Image (tube, rainbow, N blue to C red):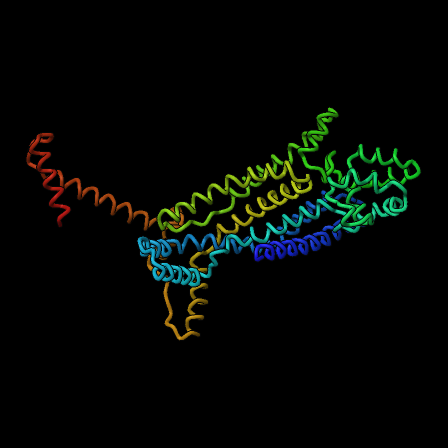
Length: 428
């Protein structure tokens, strides 16, 4: 029962998201049609993708900051994991979680912060699939293309029986929905060119309306010679039989570009370091690496089997994220980690003050981590010279110590003396 309720809840959320996306795409369609006389859903999808990713830019920047801060606090998380490494009882596990949560709170980081963009994008992807599958149901401007023909088919004898042979591919069941306007629109939207020809031959009195509707629908759904309502796999199969090679190239390019852009986007995104807490942490790190490899491959597979419109959205989304990521990475080069840590500590101590608790400082481990994260090129000339002088002095001291040997070099006595000196040195 609980599982059914969750499934129903997710369906409602995706349905509401699909309605919102349809409203936005319809607004973009009307804008392009009114200002540039462009009626094309694929262009609307690309522009929609740009708008969504730009709106998510603050969230993207916040995610990058979280990744940087995760690197800073990682030593503290490592220390906590090491502290409770061999303690599996409930009390110890609860204490470990409390201490880890305190560290996250101190640095102003949410454990799920890096997952938030993905959690937002996935419902959008599912809703987008629903919208593209039935564009006329969500984009009123496209639905209007079919209305004149639909009104005539509803009162034409034999129309329902003829359209029922195409209903299954459009996921329409006339017995459940009835032979009504919306159901007929959904069926017509999924007709192939050969189906339109057959429809015109079956109802010659409606030939002019059918051909005009088919022409407008093809124009709206066209992208480089393919129909975005069809899957690349079906496009390749039908185009191969007709020896039409341009649609095959486009249909192949969409899934391949989806995988490549997804791979590039993932590579550019900084990955937060996982705490070194043993096998579990290693497994988590390996899982993240596997996901970074598997996701591009999944993109290729999905974009072959889903409608081409989904593939266009996937490619456009990954491409826009890549550009944004390059800009964010450039911005993050000037990012002052110390200042952000200071700000988060001030907020954290303000909360502790309200609870009557004493203030805390950044741990020594975190300070060392911050220092280690600095670029060596930023190290001052004086610090570099001091570090090199110390290293050379240590090497000279060690060399002089072991040279203090009266035995003949290479002899057994000399080697025995070196062993003796080594033991003396390490006992001091």
